[in-house]
Length: 213
Image 1: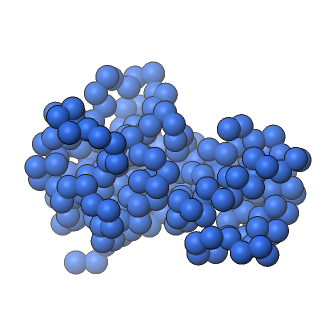
Image 2: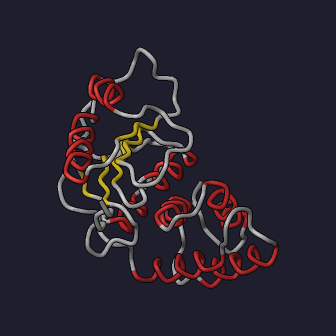
């Protein structure tokens, strides 16, 4: 069965949902909504479900995640594409791995406070499982700079010439590009964690940029 199309207008090749870390309506255990959405996607689209979490949670997993783990493929380092992936409190590396595994499938993110993914959610048209609706689009002036930044990167570690092009894109951006927006946008467009880290470091080191840590 061919993979279903992502949400209309999405820049990402998967259906997406998330629970933001700073949502005022987020309960102490936000996982039931994410698990319910993910299992619905898996059932409707005949996808194998995967749980990704690189934090030591044995014995402390919320009940909904324990249930998912019993049904899912478990925590996989390199899951194949086309899965229904729930990624819980992801680091940058885990988020990148989850989005690759969800290519052609679906992904639900329970956001960690340390990695803000609003820009990813905007590009992926991710459904907010608590508030409903999708994340508003990024401002056009930010998207312009982020697109130019994306065009400057390749696969893996940046070459010196790619780094120079990335610096030029950062310098010429019409609006400041926060580190979280850079990371989320690049993740939504398939960049790996190593590339994202290097680009964010370039932005933070650029004397002309005002980029929060």
